Image 1 (tube, rainbow, N blue to C red):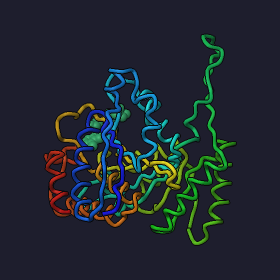
Image 2 (image 1 turned 45 degrees about the vertical axis):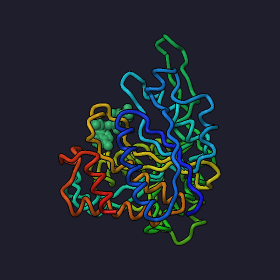
Image 3 (image 1 turned 180 degrees about the vertical axis):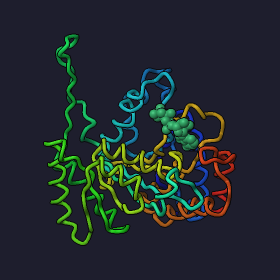
Image 4 (image 1 turned 120 degrees about the vertical axis):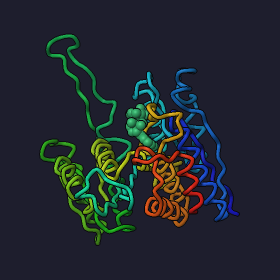
Length: 351
Ligand code: ATP
Ligand code: MG
């Protein structure tokens, strides 16, 4: 057995705890079979902690994570705690401190799972690569003329040459391991400073990745195409805001937000990367044992891929596909009656 991968596990709030338990069960089953050693350290960082102690994580939280090989997160969020607390109190500091500039969100329509788009969603298998550290989500801006009729809010977007280049490079590298096709999301017809710069850097980097087909679409038209012909896309690279919107849209196209995984990657591996399902803490169904665990389990598969065990990650995804294709087990979000534990057990059996 090689030396263990050290994983910081942050179950978080609500169904985050339930789907984390499910994902660790699957990880334990599959890694035992392959002689891969994982060592978990569980951290109670959450909105519950915020309510008790006034902070999502300890003041030295980032430093405590630094020496782990990866962070596995369930979900954070709780009724009564504003979203910006969980975002700026945990998720965004981790993404930024550890230069997790690639937010990778694979999307697949599994056989046996119904898409709300009955007519167009055949064969969806794509990846959204979202820029995760800069762009539209910046703290630069403010209010002027407070309280007067001229009151205005200003929000600046920041796109750096380094920031755009590195995420575009990552998207092209991912495309080379898939179907060799990159689509860039832009809006350079309406946003006249940052988006033309984005386009310029994309074209420059594309030239350096000869052999990969690429094109660009304005975000509005792209959203329409993702609904009308989702099967035509392979890798979509997008800014922080456009990628955020696109990944919820593409996840919805494939049946349930409960299926969608994500990886916040530091491709250089200088710092830990973070893996989490796309969904939130879902307070409306928390505590009932019925959350769909697939988003978390697929995220765990992405983590194994990143830790150097891509074939094991692929086995997990294949087992998910097999359970959907060959059984009628479904959690309630997909129209079934299975519990989180029952679905997870079926996956473990398959593995
Ligand atoms: P948060 O504030 O943590 O983002 P939210 O309620 O805003 O929580 P989600 O948690 O993503 O956002 O939930 C959106 C909807 O999708 C809810 O109705 C929730 O029950 C449902 N949902 C989300 N994840 C799952 C899952 N894994 N299984 C089943 N349903 C889910
Ligand atoms: Mg939410």
